[in-house]
Image 1 (cartoon, rainbow, N blue to C red):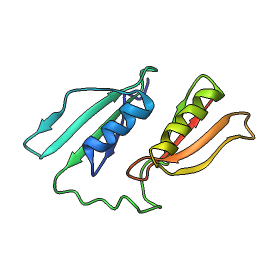
Image 2 (cartoon, rainbow, N blue to C red):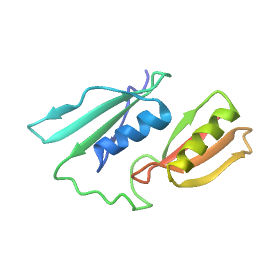
Image 3 (cartoon, rainbow, N blue to C red):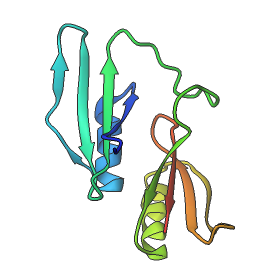
Length: 127
C-alpha cells in the first residue's frame, strides 16, 4: 500500500500551483472544476512519484496565518545534494519567501532547511 497523494485546501490556487512548480519542479495537471460543489483542483506530480492535490472551494474561509491547526505538520522534500538545498533556499530568499531555519546539519545527519510556502505551510528541504 502507498499514499497516492496529499490534499491541501488553499486560498490562492494559482499562486500555490506556481510556487510548487517553480521552486520544487512539480508538473501540473489541467485545472479540474467540479461545478456541483464549486471546487477547483490541480494535481501536482513530482519526479519521485509523489503527488500533491491543491483544492480551492469558493465558499471556504481559510486563516492562512493560523500557526496551530489540525492537519499535516509539514511537507518534506528530499534532494540529492547539500548544494541543491542551498540553491533552492537562495531562490526562495530571492523571491522573498520566509526561511524558518537553516540550512544546517541536523542531529540525524541531514542538511536541512525549513521554509514557509505562500500560505504559511511549513516545507522542509533536506539532503
